[in-house]
Length: 231
Image (cartoon, rainbow, N blue to C red; front, side, top):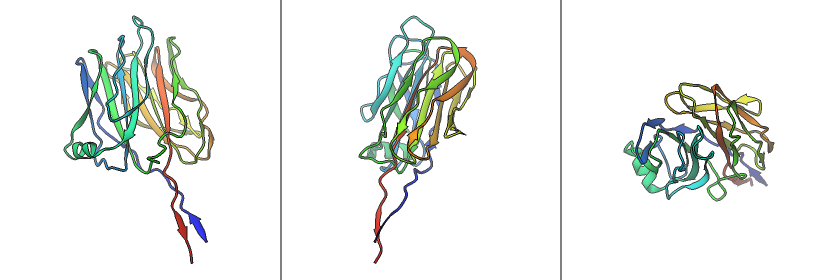
């Protein structure tokens, strides 16, 4: 008789949030304890510029965009990928991943997620939001998840300075906040574990100040359950 174990994605580990005033690269700190079975996700947000950040070669780009040049709006990068031996070594040495960015104010953070399906990491395509209007909310459109227990990661931002963000809800529960940058560049990264397959609903993150928001959302699929056979 076969029995399936239910796989629940493990605890997300966040690296240290970083911000810099200038420079053409940003060194994004690795989370502690990165393993080869982890999936890494990075979010990079750049203040009002005309060039998007460039993803590291080892990662898959989920979204990299910006509102029309010359407007007070952010540019960002969301990317993910399976951890490599180089990543594991760098994590043990409290190292960082270099990301090429425009020479402007820039903020970033990296997450490490265990128990992801490494053959099919994304459950559905990335969702993005870019209204090009001044407002306090970033309303990420719903995703229709195909598997239970997906890990939803969101990255949002605007060009307001000194503002804080309130996480949106997933399955009527506030998402866990991994970073809320309130210095020169306002951005937030959150994660949450979904329940049953189906729509996530619109996930609305709210800023304490008005700005042109921009955001992206991915859903990581848990690895397939193991089959156990009883005699």
